[in-house]
Length: 341
Ligand code: ZN
Image (cartoon, rainbow, N blue to C red; front, top):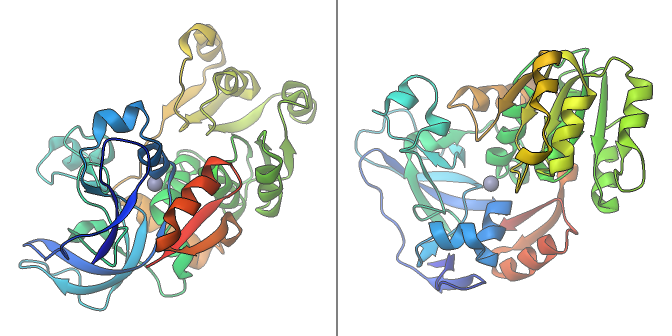
């Protein structure tokens, strides 16, 4: 079968012929229908320092995908042929005390699909049955393929109370955009968003942000401070920009929460932690999805709470156009790109 793979230690990906994977005990085989391209895939494509230290070619990439189970391995009783499922990218060691305690998403033994093991940007993928998450039929397939990433947003937003609360979300990459929609679905009182790309500012408005601010053109401290003199109830930091961390601490009300998802290149010298202490802020690091509560929350949001993230999908392409997809993402001219297999 054809698969999208990193074949050499250099920039780019290729479509190559690989052996179709076969089921092993405890795994399921999925006929992949759609995959969505993640920032992680772009890191691998660009062959940046992180990718060079982590990826061992030849590696089939892709960790966000959906499809139908066509075969189950020995010992699998909770999934059946015909189930429509989406991928959870974190493969956990079921005996790891971290996983058993509920911290599988941050366990050191956790491996990632399409990074540490072959992924799902191919017509067929084999994953541990737990990583094939049943997806309600009502969820559009292009949305189904993005649930791993959407789960990041659900995990971050639902890290604290949202209904009737004011929320500031810094950074409107795909996960920030998802977070706007999740806040709306959960009944947030007001959603503020910051973003520097006009393309993504417009998407944030479409997804229901009440106030979208460009920090390069407006004084976000002044605007949010005027509307929310005591500060917002929660800030979700999704940009990884050092200035956003300071802004999060400053604009969150005393006793509020700051949930941190964006990865910072260099922050320590710019953060006043005494502000965190004197304001009694809750600072939470967020990574991945809770296994498996986040998936249950996501299914509830998509089926019961009217969560609609379809506007985040700005491009759909056949998987053979993956290079075009990567270049479009590099130019910042996309929300999510969904590939058809
Ligand atoms: Zn991803």
